[in-house]
Image (cartoon, rainbow, N blue to C red; front, side, top):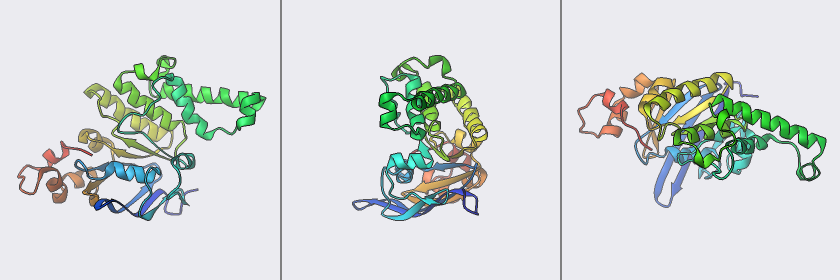
Length: 272
């Protein structure tokens, strides 16, 4: 059940330092249910650190993360995934030796109810649940266009297909919020067009709330309703794509204080 504000995810003043480096400072974010938000900024801005804080890879020094009204700050990553917050990674983290199907099946097991005993003795409940998991995994592979490659090893997929497989595996956990970390990285222009359509489909078909980090500003500006901009761990702007592109602080962060290029050039640059 979502809070009265209909915010499925609330990030409240989280901070993270590594030694003397303030990687994230007073970061706040509210994601209404069904929203599609972009998170951008120059190289080293702290975007992936934010994702790591939300998903339990790092624990905030201060601040809190609330998912669907439930505090998840400091929980272990697998418990956060079970609570409904799932992600893809900038550097693909598939199980390369496993089949495409088995990679998605692993994601489905986050919701599995059979225990060790049922698995060992293969009770009717276990067998029924495994059939349901396989059917769900195959359906998700169909959604991302990989059903025909279900039995191939994940490592043999082209790079763009590996990206889509990561999305399918994240969806298999039935997330309330889906975090996509540079899903267009390594894709050609045709694959990026297909990716935009896929993300829009996921939002509609799975009632997904999506937070997107992306280097390709064309993708971000095309599909995100609102965008948050980080620079040196601080939020320097937030608004619609048009508002962000014309914001002087954003132009300075991407192009430098002395740049006389217009905001359209700022939109063409990206980074981590």
